[in-house]
Image 1 (cartoon, rainbow, N blue to C red):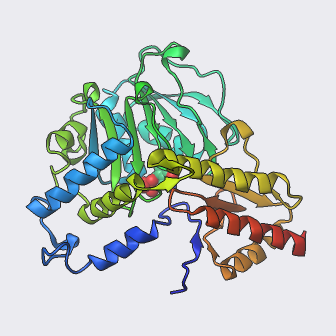
Image 2: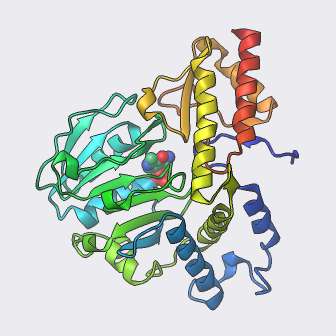
Length: 365
Ligand code: PMP
């Protein structure tokens, strides 16, 4: 392994805090004198229950999750939730989806299998569409608050009440969960896969307000019935124990994280703002690169960009890799490049990327 490690800009599974990886390595064969790896422990044993309870408590504290919300540690990923959501919440009725990019479009298509889905508004992947058509009797309104592929982020959660709807807001926050606070007053349910800001793939987090439980369709699998999972403290079936353990270490890392005189989530949010500002400023002042997303909703987490001369793409990626900047290739559906700047990416990573890009432009621009 090279030391220091390269900067990894993957959109997910993604870079994790190095101290966490080191602790996982150190505890791999023997977790805190138990004689077992966390992977080898019963999920119902005293050791794992202590890991789980601490992780849950730390996550609740970090995001200031109100007591009337359950936190579910599930499996199935974001795409799994696209089905579990209508199975649990739609009552077979109406679901309104705001399409802001690839992931919300997929959510709408999946929900159609179980519910009467209406696209409330549809954007072009570069801006949040205005003029939402919300049905008064919708069971919920689904929004993807950070489109990982398109790089479109809601900087403020939509206020459905102000738009004349009293339906609960459901947010897919997979790719910016824990990068900033969540205004729970505006949310009924939030979900996200762990493999961006939180830990290994295989863990999916669901935050659900308690009045939304208990309405699942009969065909909803028991292991994905939110009420069943909540009643069993996420132990109805075997949860992804190792992923929960690593996520728990990430939560501890985040609680102690300090930056710009701030601590915890406020500190990480500030660093995320600073990293994104650096990169967007470089893109906007360049003649070679461009980001096409409206400035009002550019993502802090996922920054897609294009080289105006696309014949340089392979050269760019090869040179970047040689400079210790990994996984910058854009999603296959849009091409170009994408730099993901998740919580674990240091400021130095964004600085190194910007310097590399400027140097590359000087050589090829
Ligand atoms: N929603 C969003 C916003 C995502 O970024 C992703 C994965 N990149 C998904 C859903 C799908 O998640 P998974 O692959 O875990 O099913």
